[in-house]
Image (cartoon, rainbow, N blue to C red; front, side):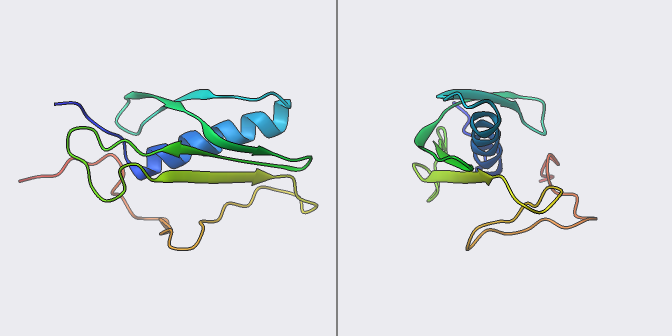
Length: 111
């Protein structure tokens, strides 16, 4: 069975690629991340939009041999410079936020 990758992994890959492009000024069409389970994920980067102070791009969700409704969705990330010091991360409309104390990422389901 061919495994797919989670929406979170796709989002992380897109965010990493967008940050790379913003900070280096170079386009990135492929990127890799390590998932919480320690698996290397290699993603193609699409829908690249580069501006002077921001970059957005996407990864197409791959559900593997067990697809769901998110398979084929373009999971998009945007990164921009801010006039405020520090780093701010926020989810777009419809995106859930994981808060401190939640321990679901990387846990295996018990049947």
